[in-house]
Length: 92
Image 1: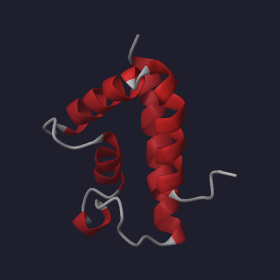
Image 2: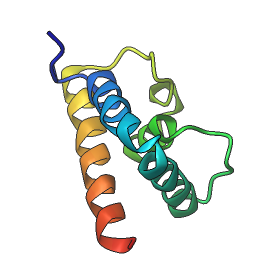
Image 3: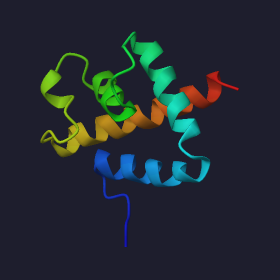
Image 4: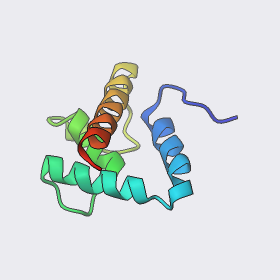
């Protein structure tokens, strides 16, 4: 059975699965909003943008498949949750 195991990739997979019900509309709006917040172009997916926000000065951590410590995984997940909350508060 699938569960959230404390890895950023698990949270990403969960959100993609959850968002499939609305044909990824909210995730598309979230990605656009995130890209605007960080002044990034539209070619980066939202997981990559979240990792850039979590580790702005460590480009080695921007890769979705990068090795991250438990603490780095917590930072990435906390950034994901924080930005999702901000997105929900700021968008209609």
